[in-house]
Image 1 (cartoon, rainbow, N blue to C red):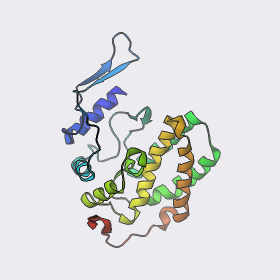
Image 2 (image 1 turned 90 degrees about the vertical axis):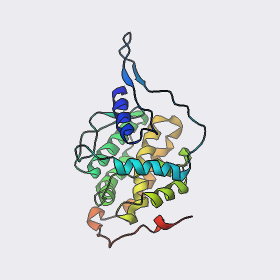
Image 3 (image 1 turned 90 degrees about the horizontal axis):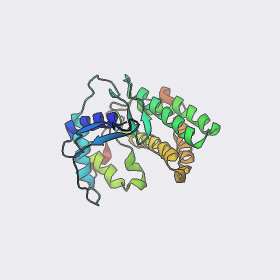
Image 4 (image 1 turned 135 degrees about the vertical axis):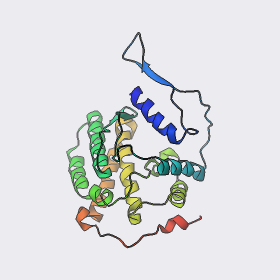
Length: 237
């Protein structure tokens, strides 16, 4: 876990040296090899929330300057979302990587909170129809996901700032549905991490039902849109 954190922070530091804790070292304790350490310089954090435009500029720099060393989706070492393992084997498409990881997240959550046949039934249809419909036509990878959830103190202003500065990836019309999709991963992980958030599994299940109804034909129902311009990218409010 410490190795994955070290390598991922190194990768971020290449593009955002002023915005991440540049890693110094990692390893295991000599007297207890079951414990690891991850060392960075001390950074003094402020108890404040970044301005939406300020945060968006940082995201823009990361999204526009970083590229995959293999031209594929993945990472060269395993990383973790907290204690949740990420499967980083290289994939040719974003759809493949996201689907594999989301299924892994669901399996991990159910290993903590127990099986749920009804959830699995809905999820199977969701993976069959909705994920291909939303991610197969997509020209880029993930935009963001955590900004959708109020518990992170983000708001519509942050989403709008992102669309103003970076813009929505094509197909633009799918932007909000993709954002909902990405937020599901964060919610299912939180359902497993926190006993007081077990209700998030049901929330994810209910959120899956709407796009299943909206995209009953899956990817086969996708029609290439005419040249799209994100109308909200010009909204100055």
